[in-house]
Length: 547
Image 1 (spheres, one colour):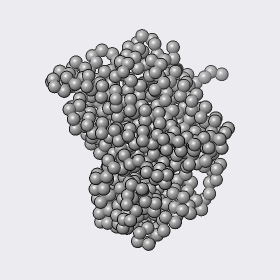
Image 2: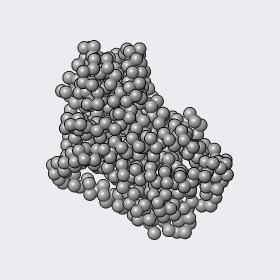
Image 3: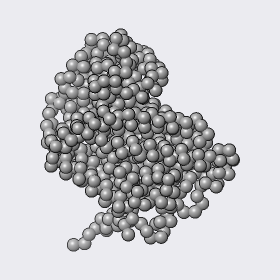
Image 4: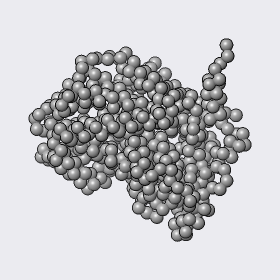
């Protein structure tokens, strides 16, 4: 019986387009984690809790400083002389209009996942349990604004700053030095572009793959929990453990169909659906809610965000209770965002050819706000207004049914035809998950293929399978607490990589500083490679990874 030619072609493409060392090391590490979690669930859960407590208590400062310095670094790149550096030669034109570029950045923010999950509930929880940074004696309106302010802070500029550190480094070395699309290029200032394919570079790529898969797994797990909670809260359908596993597998099958459909028909259609559903739900919340009050509340929250940004960024817990709060919130979100940084950095680099570093950073920082602020204002702000007016006890829903149910309770109380809007939220959750799996596996496959821009389908499917299996394993091990502890642990090496990337780019930019005093066009001609890239030279020499 002959093997179909399509299968033979797919396998051959996988062999030719894979970095065997990075792929094998990453798969082995992830399979080891999955087996350990399944075989020793209680032991792993306890170990993660212990590691979580140690990291929050002893290394929390590292996360706070790295993320804050990432923001300072990218803002200086944007407003300083380095922002003039063009990603490509002097005649290189952008592939997309600036509006398209902003929209793609906007949708990249969706791939981080969790926005539809945390939007309705995080401000509400901060109102009920006031963040230790703020004065506990504040009045109702101030408490509401502060709660919304902290939620926006967790999903705001700081998260994108970590992504942009990698985006700046990768795009600079790809378009100015001819390097491949891979996280290991952050080592180039120290070892040279020609040496990033060495053992240390492969280790960095493998590490980036593992932490990115882990970060996506957290989003996957939260989305599944929200979907299951919605079915139970709104329609009384309890899935149970087996039902949740079945739901994870169903999303995995839909992801498979999306990959088979290809980028244009797969990722694009689900991404378009995400934007339509998100904007539709936001519009409904403003239309049927207190739009003027929401705008006023959001304005005060943004004002506080601007004035308190440095204080919140470097707020170190003065006591055990405050430390526990940080461990549940800021020191959960920062590692989570860091796990996405290599992936989104590669994505941003891919779409930034012909742009300047100033345009890249501006689009990343403020394109994200175009998504975050209106969603939190509509959902989180509406939840706060319902709670404080006495129209609904959403905090009671949170305490009795879990944080996943709050969004559905909000729709129940505020919107007409709540079943329709709840179904739309469920559809948004599933569409988010499929888009996240589809787009993230593309970037991860690029990392595991030595920077190959069109990795094989088999490569992508392997990473989708890893995410499905790891999500099932962590869900069986304990759900949300385990997901949080796992995130804080796996984000630690990415924080180190982020710091290395910042230091390396400071060295590189200072070394290349004369380009800022000479004609930029002359430097573009001097710095932009005229011959084949490092990756192309390696391929033409027949030294691909699987030899």
